[in-house]
Image 1 (cartoon, rainbow, N blue to C red):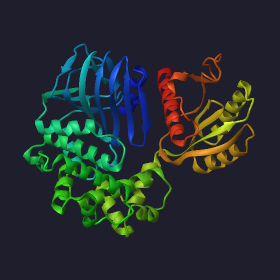
Image 2 (cartoon, helix red, strand yellow; image 1 turned 30 degrees about the vertical axis):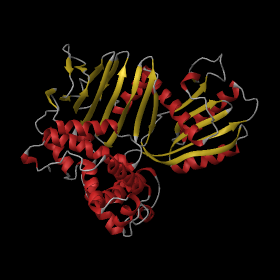
Image 3 (cartoon, one colour; image 1 turned 120 degrees about the vertical axis):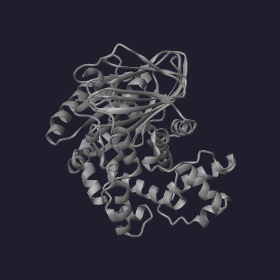
Image 4 (cartoon, rainbow, N blue to C red; image 1 turned 135 degrees about the vertical axis):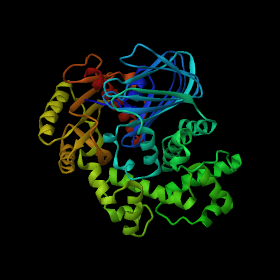
Length: 481
């Protein structure tokens, strides 16, 4: 049975309010400013089994987050710092309001999912941190870390067989961490660590007791606003230069801050020393390389600025519970998928009959090779995503390059992904090209207004256009099921 994760919920909301939704390796980000209101929201996964959904919006019409984590036993930690929400279980008649500065813990079993309602004409800020049942948690959370110990303590008294609800107040310390989650964007490794630290601190400050062995965190910012900006810029500099040696002396020259201020700043924002921050950033980047590329362990060690494979294995295992080689095997064992996306120009005079032939051949041949994906035709160009075994996809792209129905093939992305976006083969047309064509068993038709009308030969614009088209198709697949 399909589980509706945080990013699935945000994608569906995006379609309902005609929002601008971007999805990438970091997560999903929604922005909108139209008749439905204005604001932004994001969904991201810290680890398999630990996800975050946050909103900062002013809506003109009611917005509903329906079937959150349907078909999954989980705990929702809901922190509302502005406005109010309504929550109800899908099989319950009673609805409960969640008010400003209120914290709610909701335990759902897989047969009774939660629904969150954001009332119309409401300015609201809230974050939902969701922990899935133990069987869904990755090894990242089974290694005896502070976070895993905290989650174990919180979940130990909650039965997966029964629904559970707790209403309490948000402490001032927790509110600060929740606002950091809401206001920090998803791009960049340093922001990933800020979000990760803030999630941990929000849970720890709200639920820890003296027996949990959680360190007290000083809430007051020890730096001025100017110095704070320098710390953020330093974290960005570090994330972009991990391949280099980054001594503290170099950072003082770049920022103009003394050693003491730099250490205080990193301790405040990231909960660790500068050196520990750099090490964790290198491990996090290495984890991305293991998940998304075919780089060897030696190549990854070099790319993240380390000199020793044995040291890299040691610090990686300390954080994730597995050595890098085992982690890569574990990550791709269940459903290893190589993904490649490209665009090309169609030859002049292509017809609907030609497109039907392309679709039929793709469905027939790619199924035999274990390849899935989607082909989009737009403004005399093809956009295609291929998912499946690496060797077969690389062979296929060479065949595509020689196909006389297209020319100038440009690869946008290639790498290893966990799982597939498309379970079978799909083809879509953009309404502007064939105004008389309606959706049928062969084609999905994407409304022209759904896509940005920009320079499609620009690689970044191409990627953005593909994301928008793909998200539309994913939503329609969910609706059809």
